[in-house]
Amino acid sequence: MIALFDLDGTLTDPKAGITRSTQYALERLGRPVPEADALTWMIGPPLIASFTKLLREPAEAAEAVRLYRERYSDVGMFENEVYPGIPGLLQNLQEKGVRLYVATSKLQVFARRILDHFELSRFFIEIYGSELDNRNADKRDLIRHVLAQERFDPAHAVMIGDREHDAIGAKANGIASIGVTWGYGSRQELLDAGAARLVDDPHGLEEAILTLTASTSRPAATA
Image 1 (cartoon, rainbow, N blue to C red):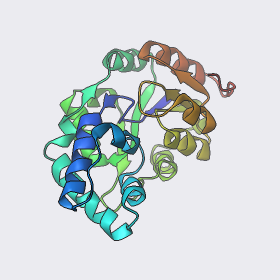
Image 2 (image 1 turned 180 degrees about the vertical axis):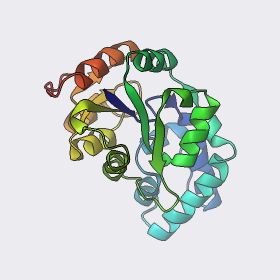
Image 3 (image 1 turned 30 degrees about the horizontal axis):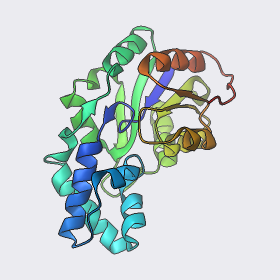
């Protein structure tokens, strides 16, 4: 039994760090700076893709990513908090023999530092993320990389995340996905992307993971 977890919006709530670092980058570029609540759509997708969508200039987007990381690496990554119930969920899954991994579009080095900071790294066999050159920022590429490295059967694995990118990446690699509704994606977004189930709290997530990883069958999506 194998479970791949997204990080932002799934294990931790990174809103403050991500939106403040985005605002910092935009301010340094001399661009208009939206309020934090107008930037939550950037939580989850690859950073370069979000800045390209926001600024519409690839070169400027690349500079925005550099500036974002300038603040995020020192301050922003710790403007973050673990969702209630997550440590207990991971402990229970580990005790029940589920092999746990992290698969995040965030830079791997940032993901590891965050999980170390919140004492969550101990639950995971490995932490996978993107690279500085944007390799594996796309969840389809990232999960393909995880499969190549770990060599497990995708039919006995599940991807857990809060955005469509998690479900799309899982589906592209033959893995079922569970959408969590406490993050930043809508229920409809997750269902449209192919999530097998939606869950509203970590207690319900434990049951869903154990059910999906115990069988090669793929339940129909439910709202």
